[in-house]
Image (cartoon, rainbow, N blue to C red; front, side):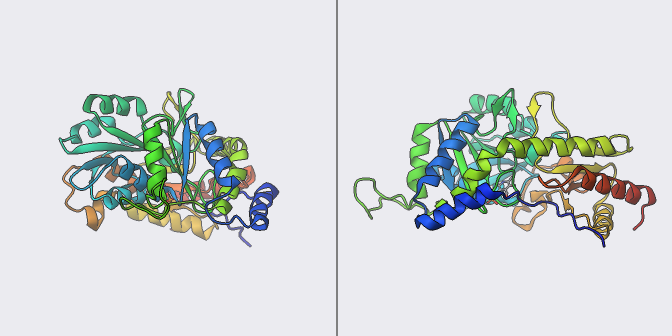
Length: 371
Ligand SMILES: Cc1ncc(COP(=O)(O)O)c(C=O)c1O
């Protein structure tokens, strides 16, 4: 019988079970409790920021950050065309326009040259997404932000622990946003975190996250807020994972090396690229087959599935989706890259033997074109 290898699965040990059980026994199951504080403090410490604020998930984290910076209808926020939909949705929730720009072909992250071309008088912010574990070029993006007086939000949902010159993502701009969905580098089930060094922004985000309730008059509200809190149960799981983050990231990097060892000689294949200034955490293994069309890519995925190997396609260009049809800026790199790219299994418990099996199946599929 063929063994099924999923694209992703969390690594849950006795530590996670102990912490979550502790919450259950304590009765502090909602958004108050010691695990929330410990998770926030521990995560700020890990990223090297003064503050960290838990949120219900990464999407609410991005929305809360934009709302806390006062982004609203009439504003424009520049984001990459190749990202998960949540980056764009969070902009739309504020009433602002999401302006979709092209990516760099090697890093797959937002291209600073394209960002600069898209800046208008309405531009208020840039969201730099650290896609698939590789940091975006924050040095160039921060320069643009200084030049045009813009806010920069790092969407680090997929890149916990990634860094530029030893400075971790989440600490490289006005604020960073993380996701702890089950397939992320560390998970809390569902969950998110905002990191920042900006005290005023942190206080504002904390207040809006909790229904914008007056701190001096309970149940009094001067404006609309949100309930974007994380529970103590989620934070317990998140804290246990945070305590293991180094081993989780190390294994991601080993997994990449094992794929590289197996596939680097195969002509026309590209695995994750790493810029010389970047520390890549390889959240997902990226594989591109040169010249592939979307149909060929889908056929390859089907062929691998028959071998018990789960894969996922790169994200589709957001600008192709019906909500963004009016997008005027062309994004040729995004359109070239998305159709030739897939993600391969890359989770903690995947063994090197599993990776060898995936790679030999892949080679057979590619050599025989057996679909
Ligand atoms: C790039 C990116 N941004 C934002 C999100 C949203 O995070 P969440 O699913 O926790 O809402 C995700 C992932 O799921 C993501 O991959």
